[in-house]
Length: 211
Ligand code: ATP
Image 1 (tube, rainbow, N blue to C red):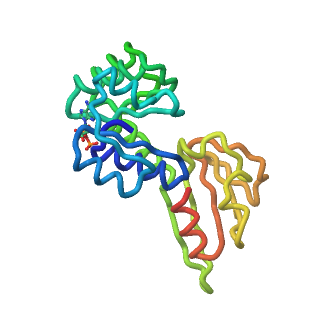
Image 2: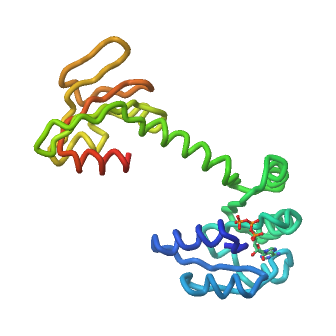
Image 3: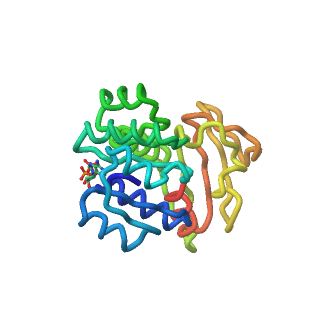
């Protein structure tokens, strides 16, 4: 990881927690010290300098991410130097679509626009989680309806862990005006379908929040 701002540090942490080996690099000593507490190795270096990057042997890593936002020149130059050093998979954080366009032209393999990408993910999650009703039936059993959004599109009812375990059952299914009782679990979901579920309230709540 080159650039240890909030985004870079957060990616480092998640990668390391997931078992990857992480090398964290920044020109700022304080940032490097912060990262050193949880990554495999942390180094102070200026990655716009070819010789420095060549000494770091970044081409031996599966992926390199450049997460320098505030200094666009440094971001572009670093991407160029890293790419020329022979790194196969270079991920770069871009500030906006103009920055992204330049990065694309100089050969960045994956371009991240955090605000845009996160906005899309949040909107999809919001749509998928629309819960129309949550009726308590007594004895901690509840009934709820969920509307299928983009994240569940194309999946089968049987693909939803929700429908397979811990006493949760699919009571019914609505597509447009048509209502089906106990639908086939092989049914492929479309946007706007409504799944009616019944089961222990705690399980339903937990499973819905992880969808
Ligand atoms: P955020 O904090 O939201 O992720 P950002 O990318 O704008 O946004 P910065 O605080 O600018 O956050 O983080 C960029 C980091 O990149 C800084 O810690 C900075 O020291 C580092 N950096 C800048 N130029 C270089 C360079 N040439 N080589 C290595 N690191 C660099």
